[in-house]
Structure formats: C-alpha cells, structure tokens
Image 1: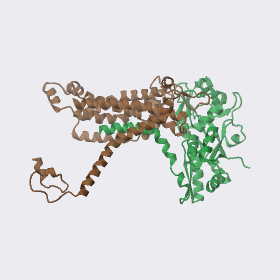
Image 2: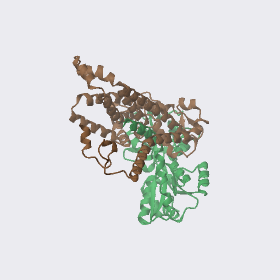
Image 3: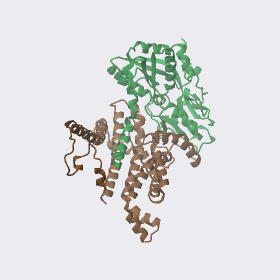
Image 4: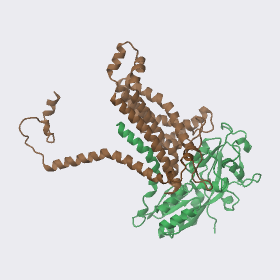
Length: 301
Length: 322
C-alpha cells in the first residue's frame, strides 16, 4: 500500500508535465474516408470561442462535416500543424520564419495564411476603477522589465473602491501565448521583456475573470471576453492624445492602436472540404458570427 | 483447530501438500492446468515488476529529453541561482529558476506548517481517542477529501479562497502563497492521517498499558510514550505529505497566481516548478531549448521528489526494524 503510494506520487508528479501533449494527437488521421469528415482545428485561445461558433454553425448546415475545435494557444496550433495533427491552426499572431520552415519541412508544403477577422486587444480594469484612459507609453512602463510605473497614483488614480493598497496588480499571459507575443511586440517593446511578478494566466477568459475579481488589477485580453465585472478603457498611442475606445469601427479604420488580425493556417493547398470551410468563413454568414462573438469582421469588399 | 477446518472440503485446485498422508487423491493435475498456473504466475510477476519499469521508463524519458541542454549550453549556476525566467524572450533568453524554486519551497513549507498539526492531530485522535463508529465515519470522510480532483481544488482556490483572502487579510490579490498552501494542506492531510494512524496503531498495546499502569494520564501516554515510539512512521507521513505538495500541479497553477516572484510574505503571488512545466510545455516546440529546459526542470523536480520519497522510505524501513 505504502509502496504503491510512493510510486504513484512519483509518477503523478511527472505525468503532470506530459499532460498537455496528448490532447492534440487524436483524430487527424481519420480526416479522410471516415463517415462524417472531421476537420481538426487547433490553436489560439483568443479565437477559440469564435472557432467553436463557426464549427457549430457550419456543422449544422453541412451534416457530413464535423469541425473539432480545441484551444491551448497559438503555439499549440502551430505545433500541431508542424506535427501534422491539425488541418487548420488558429493563430492570433503571424507565423515566425522558423515555424514556417518547420511546417514546410514536415508537411512538404508551404503553409498558407488566411486572415479571418480582427481582434481589438482591450485593456481591462475592474469596473469600479475610475481610470478611463491610458496611453501605450504608460502601459509599457507598467509592463516592461525596468518600467517605472508600479502604483495607481502614478497614473493619477488615487482611490479604487475595494482595492487594497496602491500597487498595480499586473495580469498577463503565459509566455508562449499569441496574445503575449503581440502585446510584447506592440506595447512592451520588441526588444523588451515583461516585468517579473505579473500574474500569468493561461487563457484569455482567465485574465478577464481575475481582473473582475481584483479591484486593483489591470490586464489585456481579447475584446470579445468583456464581462459586467470589468470595463475596457480608452487607449491612445501617446500620452495626452485622446484615447480611442476599441470597437468594430475603430479597429477597422486602424485608429485603435492595439488591434490585430486573426489567422488560420493550413499546410499548403488544403483538401476540398477544408477549403470549403475556409471559404464559408469569409462569407457574410461566417463574418456575421465574428461580429456576434465580439470580434471585428473583415471589411466588406 | 484451524487446520482441520481447512481440510474438511478440499477443493479440486487445493494444493497437494494440504492433504498429508491418506490415499492418493482421485484427481490428478493435467499438464494444461500446470501451464495455466505458470502463465498466471508470470503475469502477476510482470505486474509486480511493471511499477519499477514505469518509474525507470519515465526517468529515462525525462532525462533523455533534458540531457542535451543539461550537459550542453546550460549554465547550471545561472539556472539554479538567478530569478530571471524569460524562455521566449526576443532579445535575451534567460533560464533562471530560483524564483520558481522559491515558489515551490514557500508554498510547500507553508502548507506543511498548516497541515502537520492537523494531520498528526487527526491521526492521534483516530487511533487513540475516538470510538469505532466515529472512526469509520471520519476515515470515509477523510478518504473523500483525498478523492477530490486537484483541478476542483484549484477552482475552489480561484472562486472561493481568492475573494475570501482578499477580504480577511486586506490584500490586493487573493491568488498567492497562502491560497496555494491552504489547498495543498487540505490535499496532503489525508495522506498524513492514514499513514500517521497506521504508525500509531503499530505501537504495541503493552506500551499503552504499561504507561497507564505507571499512573500517567492519557496526554502523558501520548506525548511521552506513543509519539516517541511512532516517530519514524509519523515522520514518513509528513515526508509523503511534502512529496504530494511538491509534485502537485493543477491546484497550485490556478491558486498561486502564477507570477515569477520571490515571495516576501504569504500574500505574494508565486509560481511553482510544476506549474511552469504544465503551462509551457504544450506550446514549446519539440526539441527547442525551451522544451529541453522544461525537462531539466522535470529532472530537478524528480530529484526533489525522489529525495523526499527516499527519505520517507528509509524512515519507514527504520520502523519495521524496530
């Protein structure tokens, strides 16, 4: 009894490390031939709600096709594409050259990029926080390694109802999320790193949830994840300029400074059923779902 | 007496030696039966050895994945003694796990400070004070506590403890060392109770009787007689609890705030070694140095849990001898 316990303990502590990998390895093999044709769609956590909504609507209209969506992060989707276990990888950032090379090497085909919509990266604070405007420079000072802003009073916020103390509780993402990469590139600074000590959440939803529970917190996450417990604030490029509210209009006309395209990647020229699915996403019907789930649809042609 | 009872109805599969003397039994073993028995014996033997195979298999796998970096470009001193963990940095990739070790250490130590009095107290109560009925009920409930999946604990940490800690202790964020330690304490108490109780039960009743005969009170019996004679078993119980706490992943990933930080108080968020592996391995591309460094962390964890479990095992052996 004690001995088995020892062994289980040992095994458990290690098994934890391998847990995440299993999820992505099933299914892709049966994409051809099996009765309802499955499309494996893996990747970005930012896009997972949207991808699921698409999959449901598409499967309803096309009973023979079933789209299986799983999240995990842009990196997971791209890794799945490299390993050949995904038909479509969702990514909230562009492929890095190294990744592109690996896919080309593994699949024998160059990956194809499809832009399927846009996402405004909203800056969230607790709903009771009086702050309603922030600049990219200030955000950078809050988040970057060696940045100077650590207290709410340095942003001119003197009292937040319910908050304990003056410290800004920084909420960030795990270091291989697409959102993390995007935020580093466009806010923190390409060559900079994040200030240590931020609470790194494992999903877009978790960021917003934690901000909603923590009056002294600030966080960044997709526009579509807003809840009644949080509010997103206006963002300006430079301090002093009027801030822009993230919305469909401001993302599309590029006045909102931290918006990004959302990508779907396929290895080379995809098979017909995958191609049909991607084409459907670009139709009005598919793009309506983008808007319904809180993202920004592609501009009308 | 007992032997006769067995002999009354010898089953066809009964051992030949079970019927001494007497005429030859009317049945004989067929070769097929003997072969079947041999096969089963081997199967069971295989099951027994498989645990060893698995442990070594896991160790080999983890080591193989991490070895390239461990014996290659990784500067072990910087790895162990700096706090900067930037595995995906564009400009300056740094692998320092000191803050993660501090995270695991602080959560585990605080968890043990909370869990040891409760776990051992409960073990003493179960073995010395309570009646049979209460004992059965308590044991069932404690086992139930052990059966709660760790992700559920994490959920409790986020949704119940987080606001509670914020309110009670007046701190800005409730996902911190204390939160994780409370969960870990609750998770490791069941192990401590069951093993601690076994250890106390193993103390011969003659010790208790002798102590009482000498006029000692119940408390004196426990403090002066039982605890010293069961100390090895109780230590093993604590060490197994420590092993559980060090290795736990999901609950601490959710409850500690997952922030790279050397804690200065129980109210600082931290990140543990296990949580780092769980959060990052899925997205590190296979074979990259980020992937490998996560396996080096795995080796580090393996060494820690191995040391703790070995200590526990040696201590348990100590009891058996005495």
